[in-house]
Image (cartoon, rainbow, N blue to C red; front, side, top):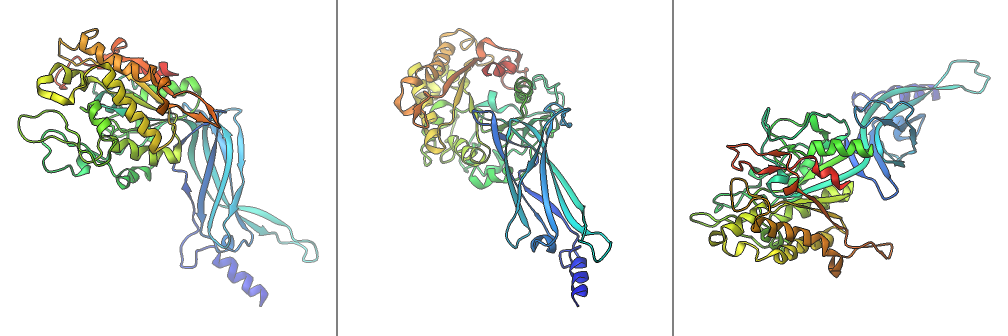
Length: 454
């Protein structure tokens, strides 16, 4: 009778009980996920999954094991002489799920998980039983401990919509396996803008809408489909894939980007929308009302921090915004109170946004780029009074942050300053210009200058 029950159990273990094949799955991390490394250069990889075996569920001669294999950041192949780390795997009591966790140095890895069955070998029944391990199924995915950035600002951070051969996409000739982003763009068309919008459709990006991106795998930058960009609102790869590739080369760790920038936004809209119920005015229109949805555009940044940031961590917010404010100053009779009064006004409003991110998420660092040239406008060129005013406001937001008590950051009880840094001056570092017919003719597109932040 005991032999009969063993045979029945063994055969039943080859299926889930309803004729389904055995299946090993990894539920997390998502394939290609990159987690922010800490100040020691290390990070934690947590894995979880299921193995629908009755023997595994009841802990009878079946188990799951996993390891991390170090890869080249460049091509994703196994790194010669690289390290292999065994992940301790635990089966959840009387369940088909498992989990494991391990701390590893920054790098690009392949998770290799195996479902294993211990099979008794035939032999002398009077001798102790001998078992061999039989691999039933294997599964793999990639994961990284590296650098994670959230891009914010306006169109020169968001990017123009991509198209084949678009000369606006700066220097994407490199192809690094470890440069990752999610290609699905949630808005603005998906955001159901308010009916009285006239010229803009500012996304309000709810938690659930951005979450729909989060559950999708990341992809290599070079594999991002045409006309899709960097989730949740990036219109294209723009120059960010190139920046990511150069950073990956420099630090030999994977790089991930999320983009919450939105074209045409002015600093007052960002500051006002830190109030989640506010509906800031957008660009002036001939007739009607042109407003952002409640809490937009800041709401998108808040949601991304709470979702992506809480899971993956964040090295820094990369801020690039200011052309619209320069345009508003030059056309003050049309923009009215939507334009800033002076550099100090811009500084105060940007620091208000920075402070709100600390309230909503924690002491996330900021890198503030300087940009204030309006293409095709002779009054807002490099070193013009208006351009210099906006660029000075951006500089002040970073350089005076150390004297703003609301922006000070403490780690383990010790002050580490404001963690607001002045990024590259894009007005002085023009590598590519937007093409005629794009609506922003001769306006600079800033590419690899962002790597100077490293």
